[in-house]
Structure formats: C-alpha cells, structure tokens
Length: 120
Image (cartoon, rainbow, N blue to C red):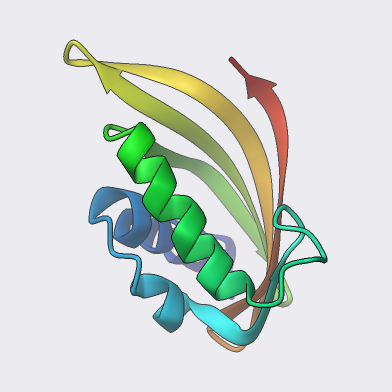
C-alpha cells in the first residue's frame, strides 16, 4: 500500500462512520481479532464496544465529523493525521487533533491507537 492508498483507505473508513453514520462499516473494515488501545484490555469485544461508543457519541454530538488531513503507509501500517470537528451555526469548529496508527491484516484493521495532540 502506498501513501495515497493509505490516505484513501482511512478517508473512506471515516466517511462511512462519521459521514454516513454507518456503524455496520465496522464489520467490513475491522478484523475479527481487532483491538483498540483506547478501549482498554478489559473489553472482550472491541468491535461491539466501538459500535456502542460511536452510537452514543453520535447522539451527544450529532454534528461530529472527522477530516483526514494526511496519511502515510509503510508495510501494513498507516499513520493518519486527523481532525475531529463539530458544526455550530453553519461553521466548522475543530475540537480534537490526533495521529491514528492503523495496523492492517490484509484490507482490514487489526489494531488502532490514537494519540491526541490537541483537545478542547
């Protein structure tokens, strides 16, 4: 996978989740053995936990979105710069910025971790 393909993969993933609010996309994008460092070791089903987390987030922040600013790919790893935003009075306001690391197994995400470097 090259950098452009990595960028498109991550952009399409976040478009399905945050653009279309398609939580079933997690079944298509996440490996059966998916783990998420942000969820923690105590969760037994990281995909189910991710669906529940996002469903609640979409309820409490109905205008939340994600912009993929850039991405680079090396072997089976994609590093992506992300900005989470909300729309208020027709204007976009960035609420978080971070770097997400995606480890792939084929065309599915096996592991993800996000390092936030800006948060309101």
